[in-house]
Structure formats: C-alpha cells, structure tokens
Image (cartoon, rainbow, N blue to C red; front, side, top):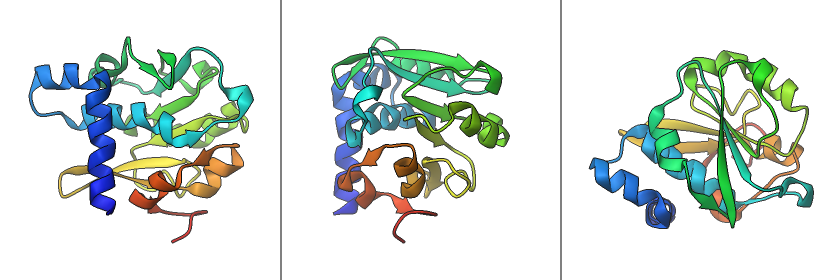
Amino acid sequence: MRCAFLTALCGLALSAGVSRYVQAQGSPSEYEVKAAFLYNFAAFVEWPDEATSQPFRIGIMSVDPPPEITAVLRGRTVVGRAIELRIFRRVEDVTSVDVLFITADAAVRLNAALQRLDGGAVLVVGESEGFARHGGMINFYLENDRVRFEINRGAAEAAGLRLSSQLLRIARLVAGGEE
C-alpha cells in the first residue's frame, strides 16, 4: 500500500505538468524528483486560511541552488496558485514563503532559518541527516537509490500545518510523529 501510494504521488507530480521537463531530460535526476515532491506536498498539507496568499511561494535556501528544481517548478501552478520561486543564499535574506527547501549545503543554518520564520505557517523541507529530528518538517533521504522522505509531524503542527494522513502513511515518522 505504501509503495503504491508513493508511486501514485510521484505519478501525480509527473503528470501534473512537471513531466514535460522531466520527460525531455530522460530519467529524472534526484533533484527533479525532489522538485516533484515539493510540488505535490502543497496538495497534501492543510494550510491555515491566512497562509493562502497568492502566489504560492517556494523558497530555496542554498549556497548553490540546484538548477533542476527551478527548471521543473518555474511557471507552474499548484492548488490553483501560480508558483513563485525565491532563492535565498543567506538566512538573513529569507522572506515570506509557503514552503522553504533548505539544501544540504545550507542545512547548518536550520536553527537560524526556523527563528527567522518565527513560527509562521511555512513547510520547512530539507535533505540532510537529522534535519527532521532537529526541527525541520520533511526531510528527503536516499534509500536504495530512491528519494524517500521522513516527517516530523510535531514540527508541522507547531507551525499550524496539518499533514494529510495519506502523506503520513508513506513517510517515515520521526521526532514528534508517531513511530
């Protein structure tokens, strides 16, 4: 069941317009898959009413932002809202976003980024060992050369975000989640 839903989630991402870029490139790279997940996480998160501003802002905090993510997401819409990408190379530059993806090269700044967001309704996603255990909400990891993710449900709920049970079922739960 878990594998079937994960396949369906990736399938949704790839069939919802993201596929045009990925198909043109052949087999999707790790960051193309992560971009597809970022795209679809929005549909599996219940956002507070005040967090539904237009457009849907996805921030990428990275010293060297992966070009595949911006290439896959640029010009797309999600949950009826146009995606606006924001690149942040420093924590001090982080401004209002709906999703903040912190790449491995910027993960040492997680605590500073969380303080900067100050408890706002922002889905904080990363890709570093221990990211979810240290306050991040969703963390990508590789297992058998496949992108998987783990969730810190408590961190998401503390930010006023409610994660779908479907999303929770396919993730590895850590920290404030139900193990």
